[in-house]
Image (tube, rainbow, N blue to C red; front, side, top):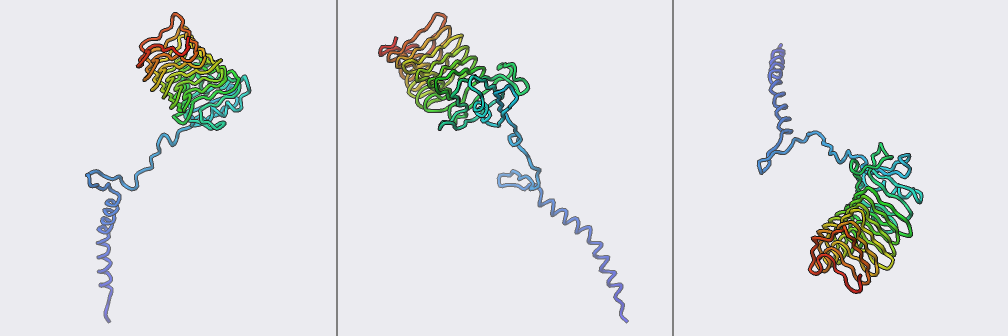
Length: 322
């Protein structure tokens, strides 16, 4: 009888002997599959199993905080929505306190801005989420940045508005990139209005319809406009624009007239112990244009210097301006 056991035993031994080699080949194949591969430029591609990397932006929490009741109710957002939310629920004559950096705009009454105010209100920065009692804008700077999506502030109606301890920037509109003020009485204190733009007039601020603005210990800088009023445009009978308390209107520019300020149509402009310096205009009035029955007062202790224009580098007053 023929026996097959030796033959079967021989096959088992051969397979066992080959098994380490087979494992080695499998391992080398897996390494080659996952190893960096060379590109045509000699650079390497990362392996397909590299770990997931989470960007800091994807983990970012709210950066903007606002309250209308000293922190009892706290609105927060990664953009500027918190500001408008607090304004909406604030009572007339109330105060909205803001902390952090608020970037972007919301749409209210058909216009885009970071904050839309149509009631008497105080808007104040300089706070932290752990201290809604004391405003300190030096330690706790607070910025409203429209990010070129619209204006920073839109103030409308026969109301009184106070804006304190804020930086207003990134506004972009046809009129009044930083602040559009129509009929409101507005006090701006310890606030910087900078790097805003208007395709038409009033890069930093626009004032109309008997609006009254007082700029105290504040700066309007590096704003731009097209035809006029790189920093400020104030126009119309009954409008009053007062620049006081060591304020500065500086480094603004207009393609047309009034690099720093354009006052027109019987508007009243006064500069008291403040500076209008280093502004430029492509046409008239590098520092100030006072036109068409505008009334201009510049007191001693003020400086209108180092402004440039094709005509009237410092002040251009005409058409019954006084």
